[in-house]
Image (cartoon, rainbow, N blue to C red; front, side, top):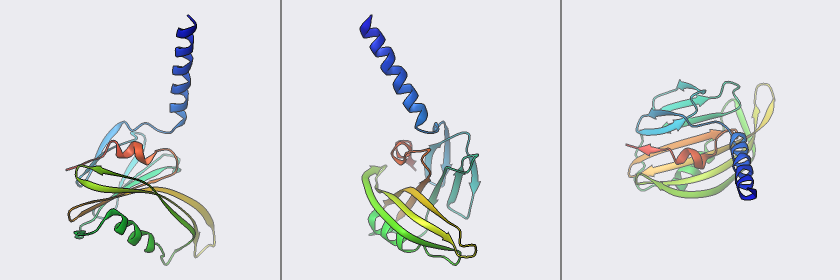
Length: 168
């Protein structure tokens, strides 16, 4: 009986912690050549060609998927990450306290994948308002193709998301 209670308690704790982890990836979406699971409660917005964003109702969590139409032959995911990280400045937003930490590598359907945790302070150049941002980024290169998945907020762990990704 003690063993059954211990198992039941452990299971209850695991389910409680899993519930605290974020949202459920319970809807399959396809963005260009990328198929992945996303939260069914999140809205899907089509951006420019090759870019799609998924946003939580409270707008505290989001995920974007980008498929480039440029030729990335001979590039590594780390090359792409370095290039993307260096191209952040815009006419509207200033970036400071930028930190990039590579947290992993994997292979998905023949694509080399580098995963980064990126944090920075973003300041609106017009209003002066600032806020801290943390993103989990996956840069994927397969031959001449390049894909990026960005997760903002802590609702989704990028590693859980990557477990659902397939490239056609």
